[in-house]
Image 1 (cartoon, rainbow, N blue to C red):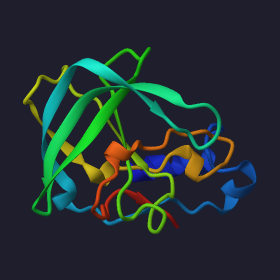
Image 2: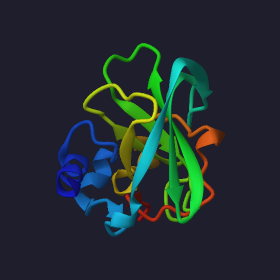
Image 3: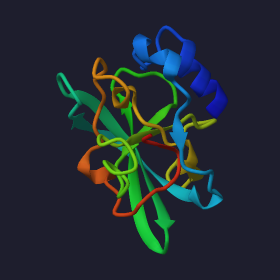
Length: 168
């Protein structure tokens, strides 16, 4: 996966790497894969999803619906992360933007994202896996031409998640 993403960033016309910098692009930086960051979580489904306005790095706010809250344990502490869908979005893809104690130091200052495509709609109490090794930095981390949603405060984790993409 990482090799494919590096190739996309280096060569694809829609890469967030500015064209003048692509020749010198040597690949994204990652934390080493760590199985302890593949964490079991319980889904708490919101039957009536709450609208959430997310600030963006530039431009107007974007509106999402909070559709699921994941409950999990990380290093002995109970934690939660909300998962969202855009109001008009179709399908099952869940968007999980988050900040953690690496934000702005080891990872992009605006936070990172995870996305999940469950095989079926999640039910209340369903168990799933959150794999922070798949956390990625949004395109706006690489170019100011992109406007990206910022994780809402409810998704700020009081822990360092040293998994997934990181800065240089």
